Length: 289
Image 1 (tube, rainbow, N blue to C red):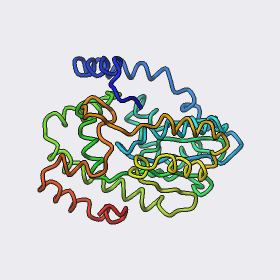
Image 2 (cartoon, helix red, strand yellow):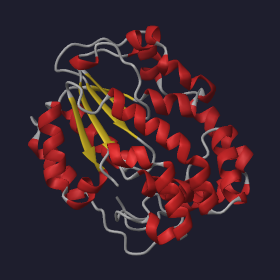
Image 3 (spheres, helix red, strand yellow):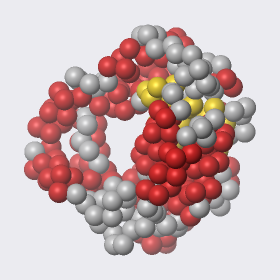
């Protein structure tokens, strides 16, 4: 994870801000030529054998991009095939994302052996879930909301028209209004994660805060749970490349702030109180109160 913003990323963000509609169209056209494996998997054409498949669940702004890439490398080194259905729908068919709640489609798209599926952004009702080795990574939802606001407003890639609409909304209102407006969706999705995954057979629940403060132990715990500990040299490389330091806050950076409790710095006291009330049940369920 680079500490600086690359020239290519700056150029991409500039293009998104100057020509947002054009960028969305070009992104859709480019991605429509990719994702061959995901298309095949959704039709039931990928059913390998081997070790138990791994499911990686996480939510927005929980460090999921970094960890998913690390788990992808580890899974590939251990002979699993990577399939990322959520990214496929976001980038190619955003209007069809609800298909991942269709049990008939899920029964074709997911196979309990030989695959790594991630990142999964919702608690999808995958059949025979206990046969998989699942990892759930979540963060204090108040910090997620703050980080999500800045990402949507300033740096998130405009993959579809929904992203563009979200950016325009974030530019029209301030952060305090935005987090209150979106707290209900967070509460609903986090509750689904809790009710369908936490404590269930084969599911390892971990917190983002543990990842950024004790990463070597964190990744070893995942590797052991998921059965991905065969390639220790890959684990060593992932640990060496992990970097959770942020020298200075940059609104263009995907990694803006990793320290727990950032919502206390960015929100008004009254907003924090209102957010605590709106998320009260979730904060208690995940021991963030």
